[in-house]
Length: 262
Image (tube, rainbow, N blue to C red; front, side, top):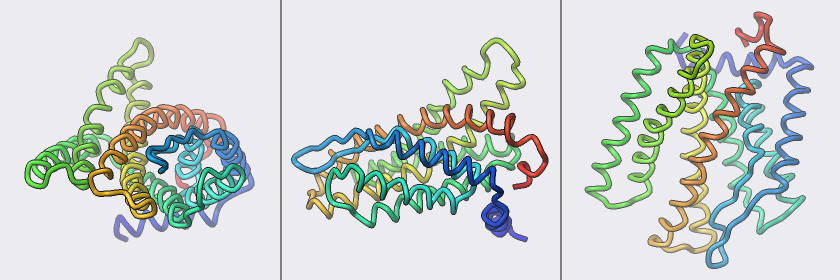
């Protein structure tokens, strides 16, 4: 069976073998996400929403990690719809709700594909891909200017390389070095699984706002840059939280062999 086939097989296994415990945890996490996200922060520019900060999205990411992409996607849809109609801050855009499903689904699938990859191989691939993104982004900016695709490659590469430094230093603090190294490896994999979908779909969302609010091409970059900066900061912070949550989940709820195979 191909690598892609194994990922989808694991996703189907997670979907069909969900026990009461996992469903309960998923429901609690979704409730926490909705409650926290009801107090979202919205910023506008020239009458159009420039960015929205939802601090409860870390719980949605955790659902995708422990319960799979389908549950992660459904949780994203429910969170978006309930939060919007409970506290509307503008027109409801079904396209953005679909994007929330795709984001949760993508994170779940990526995590299933990444979590069992040998860490030495993963680190090499991670560094090479990040370096290629930086190089490709610089070349595209030199040739085409600050186009969205150029910015995407450059941001993904720079952030991927930059995030290694503080995470690696924190793993070397005094204490159990072996445990800290495991935490660093887990952080790196979680960061990869969440950063790629979140950054890609943040740009997709910005494109949607561009056409809904008739934003010009030059103004598009003014909207895109702060949204990307916000998303990158949240991704890093959420990944630290996810690392802690997953360690707690493993130690409290998932000591049996079934979790490792799920």
